[in-house]
Image (cartoon, rainbow, N blue to C red; front, side, top):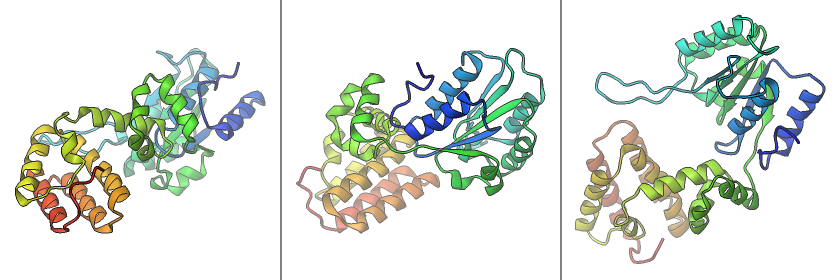
Length: 296
């Protein structure tokens, strides 16, 4: 049985890695690139199991993920892979493996390597020692060209409908199939579908119907802004801007709506006062005078 049996919908990626294993011609560094939530991290775990025998508490496996940083104001910044983490990688690849022929380093969401970390990683890629390095990136264009050039690219793609539904069932998220709009919003990414469903479930039940129609008056616009900011965490408010952009585009095909909601997202990211941001949003949408009594 193949080590990559759990991976769905990625025949090219699996073929390239299986051939490399069969011929013992693994590249020193790989870049797993493609959309979020389509199996890149799962494939990396499968490759780790093929190389190391197990992935839990193995002394020759280092898995690195972005870390958020809390500012003095209490705000949490965008998670990044930072210079100190890359220095840990350098020390890890510089030592002799303990139980295997080679060590393995996996950098998850490598697009969030900050600039000093990318510069430091480049030196490690030039001298990987007794190690293999896997970079996982949803947006490889954010990596230095010199980093990308030192990695063999393994491409990943979005899954078709049947493949995505199969993954969702295997993960125990069958209820998502009752939300076709969330499946469509996921665009072939099971991970995205699960994330969208979790966000939707986090919405208070009494708030969901209010998001299916547009405010019919100034009072309704202001009331909705207040209820959103009181009920939703900042991360959920950001997700909601994406969901509403997609939902309203399907319904109205009006670019002005997309523009308003994108400005809402940017204002929230820039730590604008949430209630004021949403008040402005709903008032601007109300002023477009779109129908407000049709289900989205």
